[in-house]
Length: 154
Image 1 (tube, helix red, strand yellow):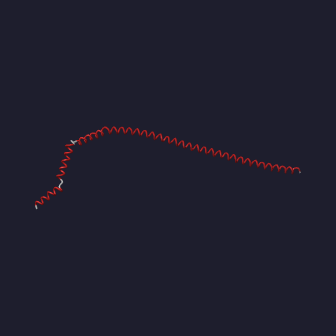
Image 2: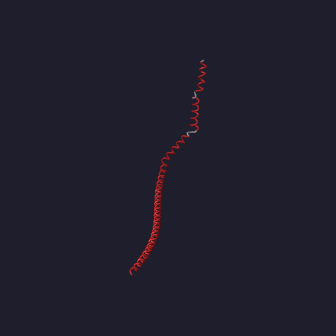
Image 3: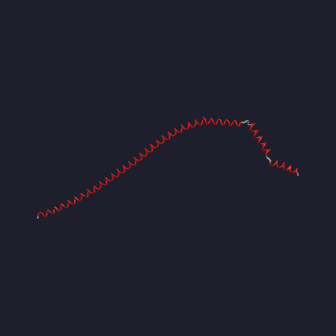
């Protein structure tokens, strides 16, 4: 029975205990990384760190200064363009207002001319009626004079 328990223990350790296999894999990985690569990755990381530090200390301030200058120039140009567009809009509004006023003046002039023509026509009608009335009254007074002349001969 001891033998069976011992065999079962060996089988169990071989099947379920993975430490020896893992230790072998870990040793292989460390040997592969340290010996064959020769710390290439560490040197690469150190070079990248130097590059990042140089970029932060030299390139970034230069780029920031250039960007700030270019942004100020773009801002001043944008303000100038905005001012010019505002002036163009003001001129356009003035032109529209003057056109509206001109149209109003022309309409008033046409209305005035129509009014004057209508008044002239009405004056002509009144003059004509006046002439007719004067004619009728003249005829009536001349008849009255004739009648009076008849009565004064008696």
